[in-house]
Image (cartoon, rainbow, N blue to C red; front, side, top):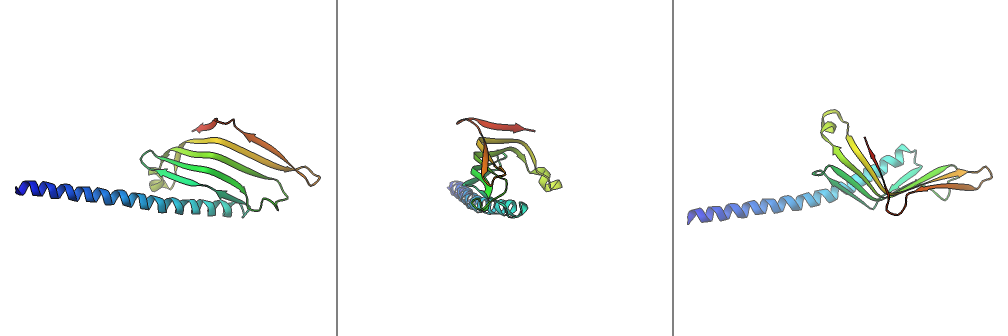
Length: 151
């Protein structure tokens, strides 16, 4: 009788710990994703001398599969309508980094990436044609193509 109560109590405690762990991971993941997106947006804005901004719908970081996935990513000029010089716009339905190794980051502050994947990328380059009008060069893939680059 005493053994059954002990086993039952142990099972309840383990289930409670697992439940708290899972809820904590979801809450922490949501907070970290939002925080990381804002840091990346700020970094792109500042590293391009306040010329380009990043817009992204979602970020999914999966440490178990060692991947990072951005959904509906757009890098475009901060003030696209007022821009008079050459500029570009990069769009992709999905930007995914696979086989991301964070071990070296903790050791050498370097991140190893072995595979980068764009799904439905579109790159538009606006050139000043000399007469004040802009011409655009559009590079995009067909509807279900993707670009994969492995290192």
